[in-house]
Amino acid sequence: GNLTPKRDFTDVRDVVCAYRRLVLDGQPGEAYNICSGRAVAVQELVDAFIEMATVDVRLTSDPDLQRPVDIPVLLGDSSKIRAATGWEPQIPLSTTLADLMDTARSRVTPT
Image 1 (cartoon, rainbow, N blue to C red):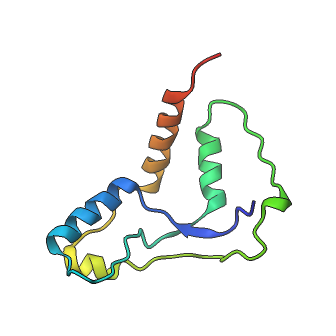
Image 2: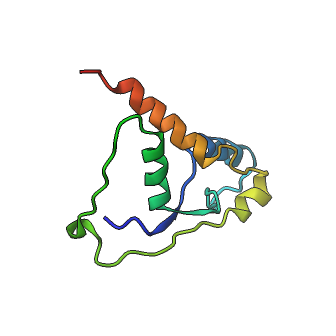
Image 3: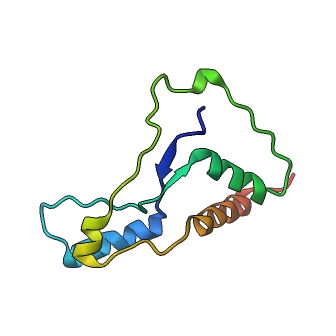
């Protein structure tokens, strides 16, 4: 697939905190964007995982898996939820990725 698109990633633990803040301080019927407000290339995530890996990783791209049309950047604006509740993401993306890697490692059975 295409690794160049940039996306707005938010740790699910931060999302849960945002939901809680909205229950307490949000306005019923209003829509709020829960996001980091930072666009990161998918390639950066892949590179970070490869760097954390304890095995050799070879990355290959299959052109057949690329979408015919891909939005280059998807970036959210969380200013409304920040203003209404004071919420902002607390967990850095690097921590999220490290925690994901640790979870994956804990589920792998050595052969």
